[in-house]
Image 1 (cartoon, rainbow, N blue to C red):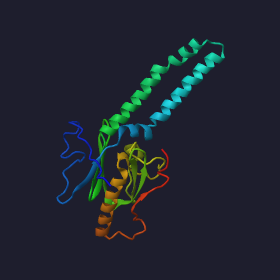
Image 2: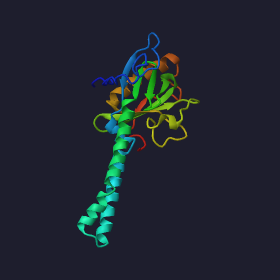
Image 3: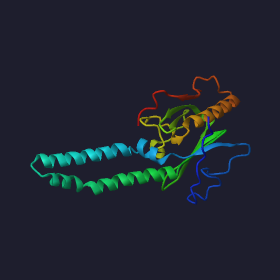
Image 4: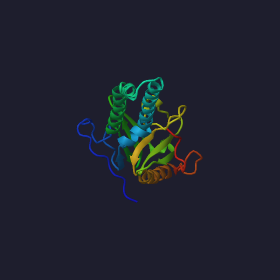
Length: 226
């Protein structure tokens, strides 16, 4: 299995950070195992539903043209009726793609041997520090092109509001939002690193064997569909 690919530098957008994706320098002895960012095309499709929205717009245009033609209009009239709203729909899908690109560009996930750090946010950056000792389990969903999601189960009483996490949250989990590393490359390789780090931390803290403690799990059917 190839090593997970590190995230590329994002220029000077977060030059105030002591290290890429981290709000402060890591304590002595703590090691970064992996850093990555979402694939923006996958993020646009999976979390912003760009393909579904584009298909919906195409259906609206088709219905509009069919209605005009069915009411006695010429083929030219039908095409014109479909073409009129096309610029607005194209602008809407383009804006959605831009937001997905910005979201991926400003996101950095960091896995160390003690924690997961999520730096997210386009205008206002938020950083979530998730100690591995407070993560009870993780579910992996593999996508095409070697991408995937890793959803993290956080132990009680810790909780992060869904509005702060989105789109980096497991879909359809409202009562107990689960942070999710979205659309990352080599998700299986990252999950293997996470599993080894998780086991080492929980072995040191004596939590292995508790009912709440569970290893990283690969779900054959994937996570709940987004």
